[in-house]
Each structure stands twice: as C-alpha cells, then as structure tokens.
Length: 144
Image (cartoon, rainbow, N blue to C red; front, top):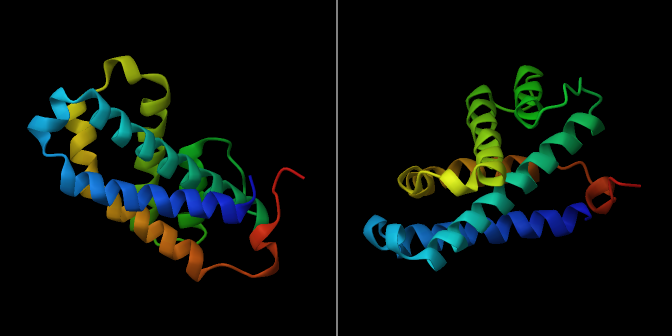
C-alpha cells in the first residue's frame, strides 16, 4: 500500500471513529455486535496505519529500528522529532492494536468504548505526519 492510500485509510478511520463516538452510547455499544465490529475495525485500521507510518518515518530518517510497534513511536519521540507526550500516547495505541489483533475474543468492551474518547490523539499524530511530510516520497511504496 502506498503512503497516500494508507493516509486516506487513516483519515477515514479517524472520521469514522469520531462519528461512532457520537453515535454509540455505551449501553447501545455493549449489546450491539454490529456497532462493536464497526468500532473495532476502525480502531484497528487507525492504529495499524499509524504504526506503518511511524515505522516508515523511522526508516526514512535513519533512526534505530528496535523492531516493535511501540518502539517506532518511542524512537521518534526520543529523537526529538515527535513530541514526547504524543509518542507515549501513540505507543499505548500500538499496544491497543496488539490487543485488537490478538485478544479479540476477550476484549473488555467498556475499555474499547472508552478508547473512543482518546481518538484525537491519533488525529494529532495524523496532523504531525502531514506537518512533517518531506515531499517526493509521499507516494513511494515502501515495499519496493
């Protein structure tokens, strides 16, 4: 997936999550499996796209790649390129992505719903990406 497609997926997921936050009150969310799956998918897309973007930045900027999803954000923050607070927040979102991907049968749906209150952190990261874009590589496919 090229960066422009990934960015579009990220922005769309953020928009969806904002809408879901306004639409699905906790009591409704806890009993509506369709609502749960909409939120879970959008959270997964937003977190994975953010991780992919962070890892690409680490690579492009020649920073140390420590290998974990969380570490991509930590390395960006420790390098001074990503604000420390945002780096910590996004590292937590990377952990959330792992929970969504691997522990879906035992998710605490109350915590998933509560995460909707923090999606502006992902939006802030997306804005940081746009602010730090460096032009020609915008649509380069990182896989080759």
